[in-house]
Length: 254
Image 1 (cartoon, one colour):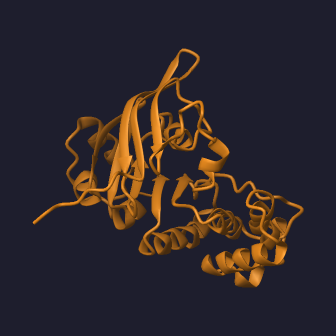
Image 2 (cartoon, rainbow, N blue to C red; image 1 turned 120 degrees about the horizontal axis):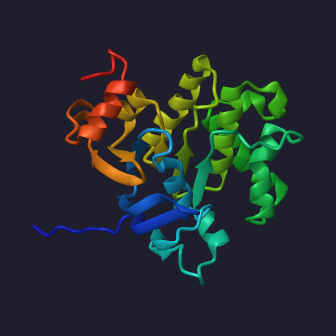
Image 3 (cartoon, rainbow, N blue to C red; image 1 turned 45 degrees about the vertical axis):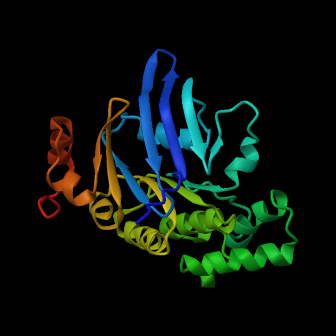
């Protein structure tokens, strides 16, 4: 029986990033397959968000390569704006345009970046707002939405560009605790739909439930990575064990 292999959707090799003298990412090798959900965990300052921002070149590394869909984003000849159209990103802060409705926040990039006519852009935007459970909020402005609703608009905006990859940078960290669940529910549905996702998160229970793989980072390096059941219950590395002891609630351990 022949075995066919396809290249990863994301492939990072020998990645190094400095901020001045601070060596933030240290020789990172990392790959994500199409349809895979990878959660990246670790203490603050471990390089998680910087790694995510290097995936779409919001931060440019000093050395190493970042390939997305087979295209080297670190190549000086790469059309980075074109490459980013295939990568959706959701930040800690919602970054919505305050003077535009939820519908317009989702439709604007479709018109300005992809050149779609307004009726087509609005059709796509409405579909994605419905996808995140906000069909009744299309005309609402950000100030009239809760934090969880604003973050769901931000997710719908990213989805409207029909990305091959979604990046989430601690998407629930700015939310009140009672609003976290509605955002995580949307992300669970995206995972169930087969969306390729890299999620930097402190939500260990979400990582255990949804991730195909959990990556633990510390001091700018990937310390270990494994299926969530193994890494979160039986970590191999002392640094991972120490971190999980500090952050896991009793109900999440084991």
